[in-house]
Structures are given as structure tokens and as C-alpha cells.
Length: 95
Length: 160
Image (tube, rainbow over all chains, first blue to last red; front, side):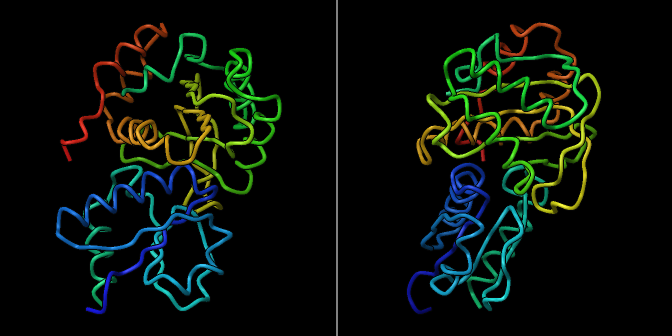
């Protein structure tokens, strides 16, 4: 593994849902002993920030033409399918 | 810190009559404005944001929730206003904006600082994931019941 992976967490305004999601991902990864740098941004900022990330997790549709994996999910807010999404995130980080 | 500390009796509207999401946001926003917690630009900002960045959350059971909010510049002091709706109102799905969902409970969020809100937001997420609590809220007829329910169900950060 070449250093810490970087996750970009996006939502509409970068203050509400991305805050909850970023914290939830941080805690989930910590529990599994995985380190990652997590950064929050607005959906509109994804195109310019994608190149510095390894994975993008978002609660709202974002641009996908930057070549980075994108996981679009409400799981960290609603709790529905949360475990499955965490596994997905870990898988993407490993590849 | 639990949600009841961000809510007040005047910002809890039960069995609210409303036709549209903008209507709900307007009525709830007014309670925050009257309490001096948000600026007069707030309601319009929330309504406009909802149009492009909707906040409908489809949940597992029969009750769906929406969490409208807007940028911090329209807010004076962090707070939450809540409404249970007399009949479901259409909001768009946050993650699939083209999809309409029937919403029964709305939490209008006034956030004045990005990262200081983490606890309040985690409380909201916790409530959203608690189907029993949502069902209880739908049957409440007095704001005091709502405040008591939130005080009792404060999300335990360790229980995850």
C-alpha cells in the first residue's frame, strides 16, 4: 500500500450530510484499523478535487467523468445498507 | 447533546397542513425566523436549494423524512424545526433527484457553522434511523411529547 488513501465526501453544501457521512466513514474505518484522509466538499467541487482523491462518496449526484470510483449512497444517513456500503468502500480503497 | 436542545415548543408543528415542500419549509422557517434564529433570506434560500439539491430520504418503513437546509450565511444561531405532516408531501430523493418520495416528517435544519454541527447532525441521522421513534412522533399531539421523546432517545455514540 502506498500511503494513506484519500476519500472525498461530497454533498450539496458540504456542511450537513457530508459531515455526518465523513464522520461515519472515519469511525467505520478506524474500527477496522484502516487509515484514510477524508475531505468534505460540495458536489460542484468534485470535478476540481477528484484528481487528489482515491474514492468519492456522495449523497447527491456528482460528475463521474474524472475516472475515480464514485459511491452514491444515503446509507450513512438512513442506516439502510450501511454495512454493505462500508464493505464497498474498503474494497475500493484496496484496489 | 440531544435534539430537544435544538428544538423549542414553538418550532415543533404537529399534523401540519401543507400542499408542497415549499409550503412546509415556509411554515417551519417562519418559526425559526420569529425566534430570531435565522435571517429573512433563510426561507427562500432553503426553498431554492431544495429545488436543485433535494433532501428527501427514503427509509425502510412507511415513514419518510426530509432534512431541508441551506448555507450558513442565512443562519444566526443553530437550531432545528420539526413538522409531522397531516398528509404526505412530495419531496425529491436526495440521491436520485428525479425520484419523488412521500414525506411524513420534516426536520428543517439551521446550521451556522460547518463542523460544529456534527453532533446535531448525527442526532438527526440517529432519529431518522429509529423507526419506532418516527412512529411515535407521527402520533404526538403536543410538542412536549416530542421534546420528551428526543431527550429520552439521545443517540449513544458508543452504541455503533
